[in-house]
Length: 99
Image (cartoon, rainbow, N blue to C red; front, side, top):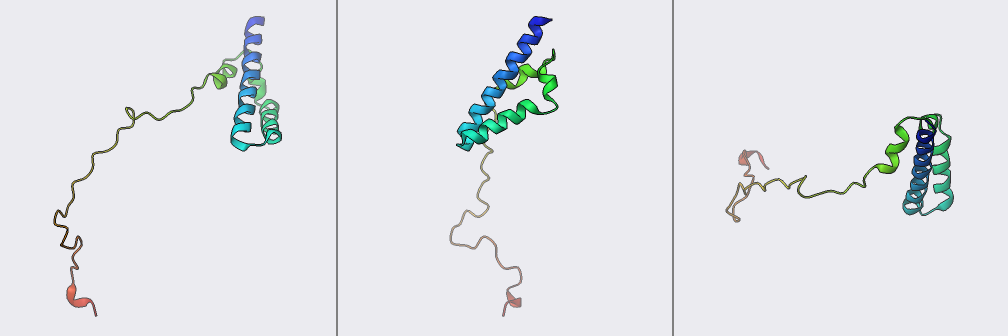
C-alpha cells in the first residue's frame, strides 16, 4: 500500500513538472508556467492524484500526439466536372433576366 501511494505521488509530481515544462515552452513565461503547475497541484481534484488511484499515473504517460498519414488518408480528388477550360463552369440559367 505504501508503495502504491509513493508511486502515485511520484507520478503526480512528474505530471506537475511536465506541465511546468510545457507551460514554459508554450507560454514563454516561467512565472505563468509556475502558476499553472501550482494551480494543477492545488485543485480540489488533486486529492485523487495523491491517493492510491490510477489517475495520477495517466498524465505523465500520455503519448505526444503526432498525426500519421497512414491513419488519416487524404480523400481522393474529385474529377473536374468541366474538362473544357474555355467554357464557363456555371452557365447562367436565366440569361434574359440580367439587365
